[in-house]
Amino acid sequence: MDRRKYIAALVEKTGVRLDEDDPIFAVVMLNQLILEDQKTELEALVGQLVKVGGAVRGEVVKQVEAQCNTTLLQLKTEAAGLKTDLEREHAEWRKATKGALQEEIGGTIGRAAGALKDAHQSIMRPVLIASIVSGIASGVVVAFAMFIIR
Image 1 (cartoon, one colour):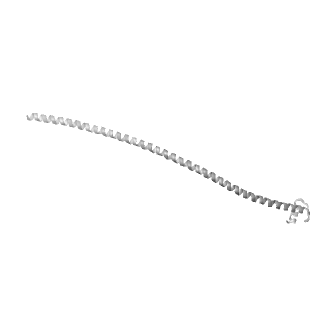
Image 2: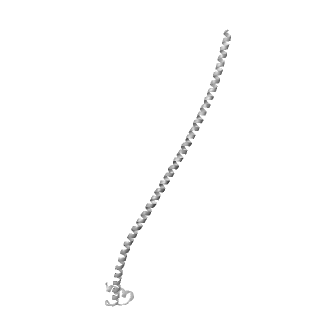
Image 3: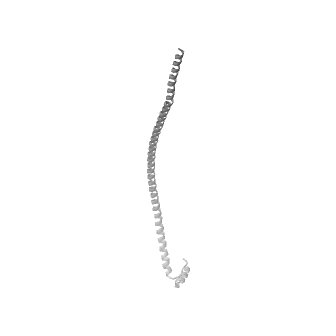
């Protein structure tokens, strides 16, 4: 401890002059010794707190890790359930769409067949009439020819 430095600072701030052998320095030295003892005790306590804090931190990390793992497992289970639900719903929609397409295709084929039948009838009716008329006309011509030849 540099007593001169402290005496100069004291004189500068307060105007009070001390001697280097003044008994106040004994009080200051006693205070310094007490503070060093307290410092040693505090360092020991801080060391213990660091150990306890490390143990607590380790336990907290374990608990947080366990909670995270539990939550992750729950989320995986929930995701698997959602996936299954979506696959089931997709299959139902696919089946319904397939059925609707089959009905639509069947209806279209039925309408096409009906239109084809109608077209066939509309084409064949005049052919039939023409055949009948042609047959009658041929018969009349043959009959007339026979009548004339006889």
